[in-house]
Image 1 (cartoon, one colour):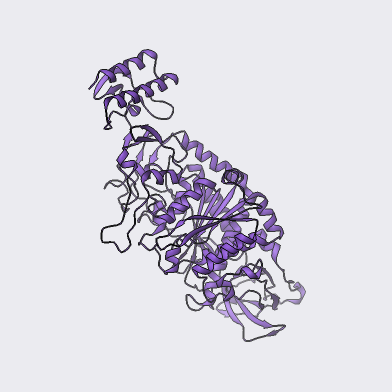
Image 2: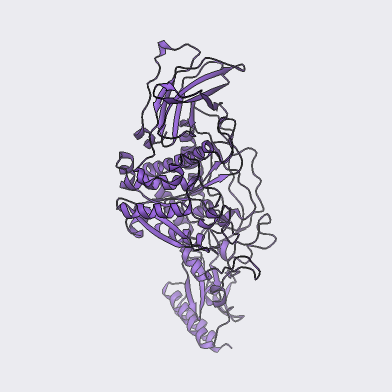
Length: 624
């Protein structure tokens, strides 16, 4: 259980050992936000356990009990054996009084029920005047888009801990809002230095549990004076974007209103929703990014995925997968009675553009969190998908994930930051291979077969013509919704990519910078060819820029060798890479001025002698 759950809530008295039968479990219950964690002593020979919940009227049952949980030792995913005998009941109405009992099943025959544990569950955290529509309805419905905007606006107005920021506006005119929560919230520069976690939900409009969990977390952090909140906000700023896809949410559709799956737009940034999220990541540099989803099937109580692209620095990948995901978060889920698993990833449909994967390409710990829509055999009383018990369970699971990841950051911030810094330093050095495809293996059974892996040795970077730098994507002529993206210039800037002006509108993007792993996915001319990403779908690259990878032995100007050695600098750029004689310059004077600037710079860095620099300048001046 997370540290915040321990701050909660009441621990019921355990039935004394001498008062219990040897084959009857001894039960205790802890309650958290929307959850009851029922734990018991194991009974020899039991293949499974049944957990019963009964609504109480004081000390009297208000009706018959219902079996709400089936615990088996194999509830965990990825061939994980469930550890302690604990079950998380997270479908009840909060604030009510309940009784819980547990019984073993041996050889198919149920044993005796344990002594009952009766207790009241805590109300929703935070002031009741800021409850969501979901909470006010006891989980019968989700919060409307109008309720969400009104609630976030009121919370920001009434709490000095909250700053509300607009990330843009959707095609239907809805605001895309982020709540920055601190004590008090600092500037973006201060927050980037001190540390933050980004909690993002509802990128797919019909997957709303993360949205509801984010709004509940916002209210708790904004107003509560409990120790958990005070301690957390003393070290961490929490950035909450409950709804990344307001139009999709309002219209009950997965995509945005133009038909774009926004979780396939975090590289291209063609649409305002993804563009806004990119700017948040650029400005606040969160240490951990959490992207909350729901999946249409049934499975473990909660599933996770982390950045898998081979372009993610290897130490960051290992830390994210083995220590954060499968290490800490899986273990905490099992301890809390929540069955964990790994989300069933795939290698098609531009998976590299998932926010969780792009987080790694931006040298950040990233976690995709998936809560299943459908009830499983572990939750036999849940009933129909979309029913109140089902909606409450989904929201409580997402909230638990947010709370637990915030705990992890609070306890391990220094290690997270050091891992991030190491990844950024590795990318900035422009050493090691570059990738346009391929994924790190993950320890699941059966293993996922890797697609064709394209690997390049380091090179200088890319050059864009003025037309490419200004290029904009847009809708087809007959599209239902007409849209046009921001130009490449603004989309690169939203990511935080460093761009250098060459002259006459020509720009270059060197790979020796922190976002090196991301850049080829936007600009490489081979990205969408038939031999690269053969299982993928086009639509990652922004433009087919010119790759700067000239390793000829001597410096050439307009196809003529100068005889000067074509040396390569520490940034991976050769002299030929920087000459830019392949570009269409408006006139010779501007080209000559550019080359003179390059050779003077390289002479200052010791890459060219005075004689060599002069030879190149003379060749440019005398050429056509």
